[in-house]
Every structure is written in C-alpha cells, then in structure tokens.
Length: 336
Image (cartoon, rainbow, N blue to C red):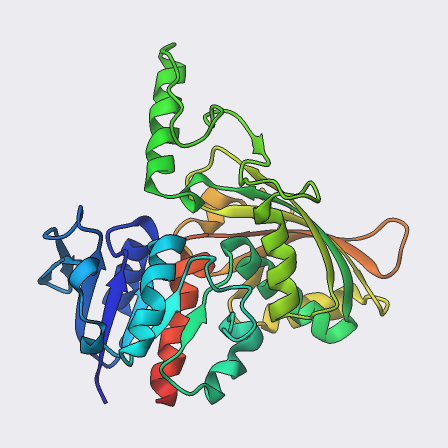
C-alpha cells in the first residue's frame, strides 16, 4: 500500500541528503511533501524530475501524510511532533528533543531495530546523535561477543554536524585566513578554520561535561546496554563532512582479536579498513558520501587482555542522520 511522506526541514543539510536517498531507494511512497519555515516556503526542490514546492509548517496539515521525517531542530520538533502524531502521522525525529524520553524509542536499526517490529502506529521515533550512531554500529558486534564494560571515546566532529551555516563559515574563514583577511566568527565563538575546538558543543553541565558528551553516555545506555560505562570528550574540527572517533574499550571477557574482526566484518553497514600501505580510515578518502561505518587501527591494549583500541569514521549526514532515518522508515513501511 502506497504511503505519503512529509520532510520537515527539507531545505537543510540533512533534509537534502534525505531527499537524495529518496531518489535512489525504491519505497512505496505515493506522494512527498517538503515542509519548512515560513522563510523557505515557496522554494522549489527537484525530486525525480518533479518540482516540489516547499510548504509552510505553520499551516501544514499533518493528517495528509502517513509519515514525517523531522530535521528542523529541537524547537520545531517540540512544537509540531506531537501535533503530527495526533493527526495520525508517524514522526521520525532527527533532533535531540525526545531521545531521553523513556516512552519514545531511540533506534539504530542494525542495533535495536527489532523494537520497530512491535510498534503500534502512529508513533514518534527518535534518531540518535550522529556520533552515537557510528559508534554503536562498531560496538554492537563486540558487545555481543565479550560484553563491553567501559568505553572511553574522543570524537572529532565535522562542522556539517552544526548545519549549513557552519559549513559556510568554515569555507569563508579558510579563504580569509589564506588571504590574510580578518576572520569573522558567527556560528562558533572561536575561529574554526585551521583550529580544533574542544567543548564546542555547549552548554557545559554541572558535572563539567558538555551536553554533547553526556548525550553519548545517555543514548548508548538507552540503545545498547543500560549498564555500559561510557565517557566521551568531544571536539569540533575543521572538516566539512565525516565524524572521527578514537575508541578505547574494556570488556568482561578476554578478546580474541581475529574472532572480533571476523564478527565485525559480518556486521551490516560496517567495514574494516586496516591496510598498512594506506592511510587509515579518514573522512575524505572513506567517509564522505558513503553509507558505511569504517573501523581501522585496531590494536589490543599493551597491558590488559580485555581492552582494545580502534578508530571509527562515518559520514555524519548519512548514517549519522538521513540514512538511519531512511532505514527506520523502510522498516516501518514493510511492517505496516
């Protein structure tokens, strides 16, 4: 049975990637509507040869669609997601608005997608933080084998995670820096071009960690294991697309490296890259434009048999956002 879909925030960075997926994924969708703020209403978006006029969210009728993909920020989700659900529309929300709410599922299809199979629609479904999505794809097969006790992760997050304005700021600052011009700062309080901004994902909480860092803990516990001990340090780096993570973890059982790598290679959406003749996985050579999560530089700890270290990268706009939502949508349609 054909369905109708609304894309809320279809003119933003993630929304545009979601639209690109719709061009290549064959889903039984009869009609697609693109919804955005009053400022973007009236613009035209091309989709499979058709020109779709962007509609104003303020007067959009959510009862006219079966599903809505939200990627317009927390405030929009807070204002319109429950309204959409009350109109019979199932919402897949990419913001952080509902991730910690116990009654709302937080889903990575490869990790806990079975939850979708028993949902009674309409429902609100939350998409995880982009850094969490790629991390848990890498951790899931290890957890299944050896049960992970603790994870320490440092993230190096691209500016596209902030949005289009941040992409534009990095572009302009890079040009101005090379031309010896004055650097203008609007999106970030410090210069991002040729710089690294630790703690850039504020606000900082009472425990000294930023909200972004605590999101990784909260979401990993909700999706993978409520008892997992995860601590993160998050930094923004002058990269356009693709988040990188240095992961150090400890398991309850002793790790067999060959067994672990074999299991990870079998896991959907995950690819091991450990060719010593090349640079290890990096955003430009591997992540940007790819749907996969890449893992490399896998090493057993020098001192403990149940600890390993590795590097994880992925395109944050894809598996970290639009692709994960597309996978959720596809599974919902198949089940309903």
